Image 1 (cartoon, rainbow, N blue to C red):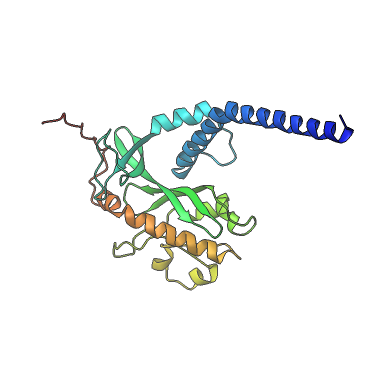
Image 2: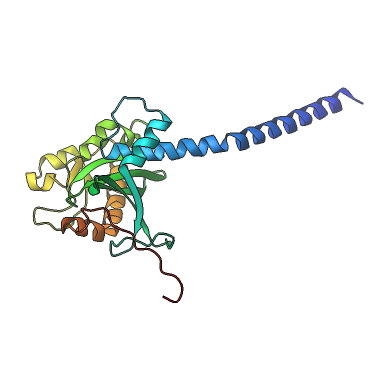
Length: 245
């Protein structure tokens, strides 16, 4: 057996063994990876309503407990009505209610927007008045570091707090992201619907603005119900009826 053949055989055996070890490690770590993803999702929902303090470390158990104590997850239909538990359809819209003593203090919408280089995922929280932004978070994106990637930074996200999705007459207009020079020239009434953008990341802001408008439009029936004081109490999801009833 030649030295070249031995070397090739050794390299092949090493590659196979390494591949098997990596596959085993990946399979073994998958439950932990899924747990990390789930906890990070819950953490961002809590952060959007101001229950997570910036710079403070939270254990997995603490986040899970805070989420269970404060958040009610459900789905609504196109008219903003709660969907029956057990009959969730592909057209159902997920929503997370921040509840205290049986009343809704804020509601959180999942954000899935197009970005410059890929999808932008996050959460937008609205106060129970159905008009005012309570908070905004981004937990996954593909934007350019130092430019569009600044959407994940606290300094940018906190600019959303207090902004409104309706104009001074109560009409839905969404939240826009504009250049600081543009917002500086706006009236105070107009500024309520805009967030200062990131220098050098105009396209990221443009895509995110369009995505937010599309998502908020989809959830507008829910927001209208909040503005009409129809969802201040935790909705009671109707029980599914038995066949024939």
